[in-house]
Length: 455
Image (tube, rainbow, N blue to C red; front, side, top):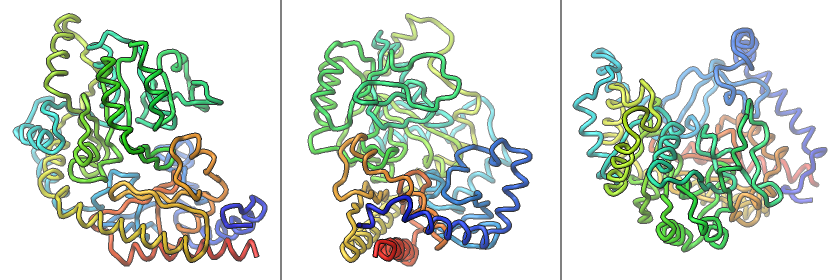
């Protein structure tokens, strides 16, 4: 039996051992978890915080660079980085100073600040779209983009790719079940059938894309340039060219969500690969972890938006929130765009990610396990499959949830954090070679432990 094929029964003893170790080494987190359960439903302020493999949430004390320290004084090489908001490192001094300075002068006024002008120019220069709006989260940005797409095109349907995730946007909670569109399982309080107005197709399937857009009733395709939320799935050569050509031919707007693929380079995947979206959305890391997002549009689309607004009349124009574009967020984005998200920072991230992939490939070769590292810029995914999946159906077949759970807990107990969802590993400019080697060594130790179970 290979490490990849280890059964749940084989893993059960290892899982029990690792859980005992965690409970022994994290008494303060365990105690705080019990106290939190009395005041927070589910024991945490936001339920995803309980989605880690550990038997109790790790309570964080502080993060500096790419290191996190918990309340038990244990330190971790952090490759989760808040699931991307901390992609450029924790406790960045330039961001801390900018926030402190602006907070002393007011956090928000429901009015623009002079910094907003510079931020708009920087966004246009970096990402290539000339006109921008601010939001509080990428969810908000994507909601606004879809509303405007419908307003401009006069169409009511949208298209997404199976396995996608674009925040808490209702229209995107649709997947393929036995080849047919269906709402994702577990939706709370769902009233409308989102599959009625959302088409969903496999990623990398040009024929399915042609067929889905042929009726001419799709307002917009909302896509990540690389799928990252069901496991990392890279676009096949020519897929993005086909996506852009078909959307243009059918009068369908193309929305590219770069919230995760900002790891690709200074201008995201869009600039690195010459994509030409009508709308570009981005959240999480753009303000250094402060809740903020942006979305940009082409000049042509802006003109069409103005015309649609004139037809509709005054009132609600898309979706906004009072906190969107506040002075604190603008101060953070200005600093990120001028001092933190630099070419030099990306060079360090790319070098670190290359070192990580090389290390993982060494483990795979040495241990003869059927695993595959997949990379986009500073983001690396370790897929427990011998060949990188090309769509969500193939990825789901590769997801061994028991193996994932014990792998994550193994890493936690050895002082390494990766994102709790599948095996995403993110390298920041602050990540050291020693931290990368620590992660690789932990993966190697895990593969070796599986070998001993199978012997």
